[in-house]
Length: 131
Image 1 (tube, one colour):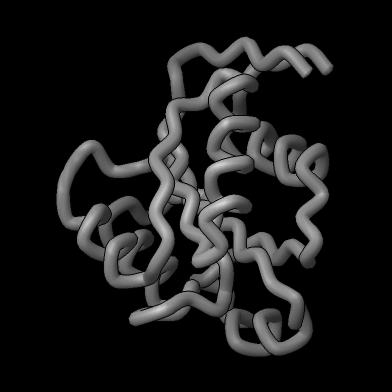
Image 2 (tube, one colour):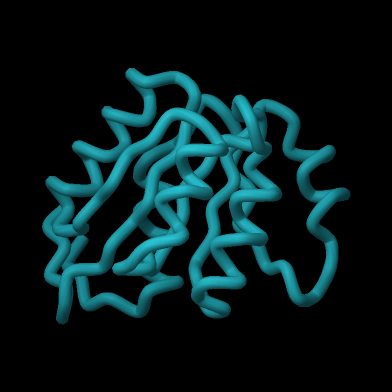
């Protein structure tokens, strides 16, 4: 897929599996996004305290030091319209935790379907792309 973005969107990828985080980061970069990768909740929270604030967050639900829900809530406090993608092996538990109208979160199951993530990310960020 060739992504043709009007401006490069920054995506923060958080997963305690370093290989998975790195792979998603590389794939997103190849599709035209700027990415930053971290492997635990505390590091993600620390990253979100400084700019530039990411346009999107792709996070695992179960993380060390702070779960993905805490990371996503703090991320939204920094950028209210941030696109949030929660990756989990337990989608029903996550959906139950985020079924609030002010917390629209895209819940994705493991193993991650990258083309699905990319389609949703493009839709959320409003990018022009050719698929």
